[in-house]
Image 1 (spheres, rainbow, N blue to C red):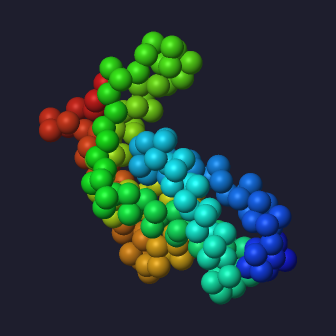
Image 2 (cartoon, rainbow, N blue to C red):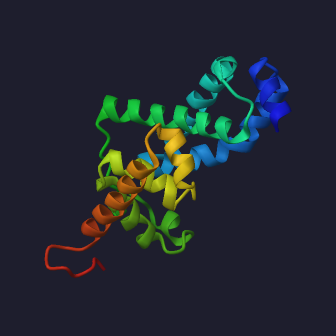
Length: 177
């Protein structure tokens, strides 16, 4: 893996394709969950890898975890730029979907509700929450990606969970159905 990263830094196209094959789907899934929009997630995934290709020489280490953190940092920054550009607050509506789409997706309404609620969590908490709970990153990895102390990352994840729970419960404390 260290050799692969060294080749990537040297501009080797085969190494880039291999790194892209390893990380394209996880980055897309991360951005899709973060943004709530698959089309924008696809565009930002492509933009992320364009930056990876052209900025690989700036990577300061050949350590695989640092490379992964660097790629996720680029993706996170792409998402933040998108948030700033559009002040993205997309809330999904079941009326936007046809019966065919719903019939092939198990637990569709639960997933839809989760995505709606997640969209309401402020970005500063949503990013580390998704990294921890959906992408299964360790607090150390999130700390490296977001360039924040581990204690801060733990606090952000905790607050994100608390906010998500608050969003899930209506004012009377009864869960959504």
